[in-house]
Image 1 (cartoon, rainbow, N blue to C red):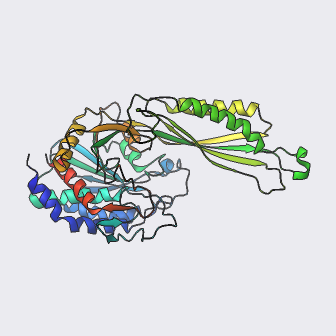
Image 2: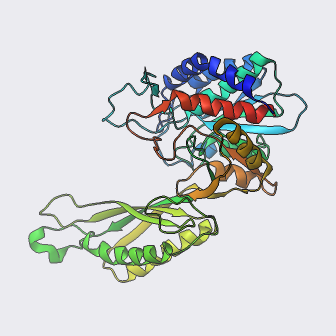
Image 3: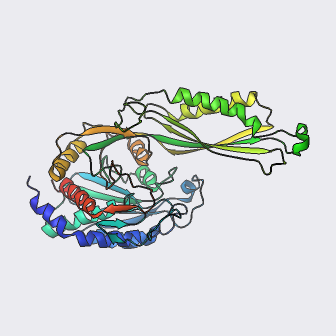
Length: 420
């Protein structure tokens, strides 16, 4: 198919995409607390309706939200749009939340400043820019009088950045998603690279309890920091074992990667203890971040960590050792031979001229694993799109920005994908 008319129409809609992205960026949906989802929907919902979608707002119930161990505020409201045209279904998915802004920003994170071909703001890359691209693709096809080749469901969802029970999980469990997914994240715009896997994630906080005493009579106390050492020894031994495992899913050949296949990650990331230099520490807290590959199972991962903790506890004088676990995300694996990825490669070739593609998994985690698990035993096919660059990753960074040219390129990809 000749896409020239579509691509020219996308380019003519540049101002629309900049304007709608600025309006989306202006709504602060930082998680936590993840407030203002309803205000963001007030911006996007009329646009979907303008392009022929019927819409409904679906809130995650309180009993599901209560599983998320962070301070949240506001209703966990998701937008579901339906474009019914009698054609095969495809579900377009994006999340609305963004990570917090650090103090080093030099631009207004919610201002949408356009400067030197870049649009600045929190979420421009991850992933509000993708929402603007999808709306731009819909406008382009509407302008040209081209009906999408799919009955599109559009899902704009809550709380992806913290996981556990994001809106996408709830909607998938309620049957809103089709097994053909147009995923507006984890795609790269500057390289012929396609993500086909991601790691699952769990975090564990370990609390070691000792007994305080004056440092001058430390024999009267139990030093929780010192008695955490046997625990650390066991965890480091487990880390060495875990990180030698190799997945069946290949990864990208980035500098320093330990294997050409995905590998697990075991991180001891936060440790806190003690209240004063002259006081024996009565508590020490350690937080672990564990990324597990598609070949591993959550229950096995949890069990091996708990077994290591029990071994360390037996070698320690601690009065108590407790822990709590948060399962943030399951892993994800995509079929590189699916019809969705075949179609994706065709449109990327049309936009960028690429003939050859590389596939790989990444150690970052995503809520797409929840969606795929909820759709089982359906055979799921996923086409990942995105505006981040593999050679210049800007998601979650200070002064996050998206190139205007990349917005145009992704919009061309989407318009071509849903029109043919």
